[in-house]
Image 1 (cartoon, rainbow, N blue to C red):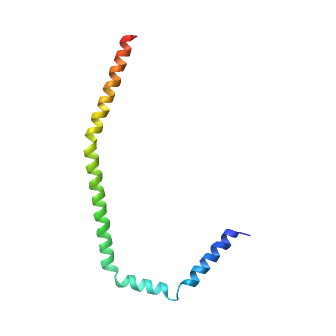
Image 2: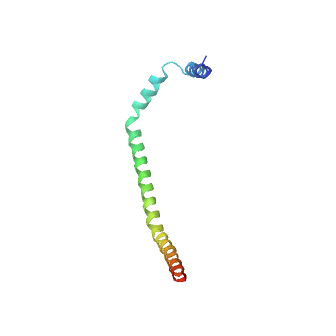
Image 3: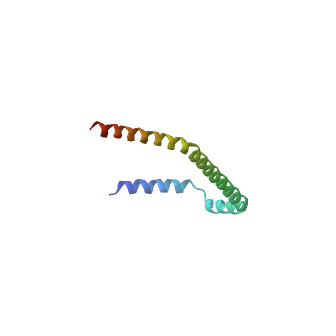
Amino acid sequence: MNTEKDAWDALVGLGASMIKPGFADRVLRAARARQSPLIVAHFALCAATAALCLGLVVALQYGHSGDDNAANVAGWNEIAQQASELEQGI
């Protein structure tokens, strides 16, 4: 006996009993009635969000890359200097 499947079937049955007849038809009619403006507005919001995220990524990348590069070069110069001093000591 599969108790998980039985529990799932019971939940599906309970959910189905709570939905009024014709629910799917009402949802589809409402969606078709206001389809065009909703899709255009949704697409515009998505495009604006994508542009904002891309702009933020580009701004952060160019804003911090110089600082990071300078810190990395300084670190490597220190390592090279220590290696040179170690070679001279040997």
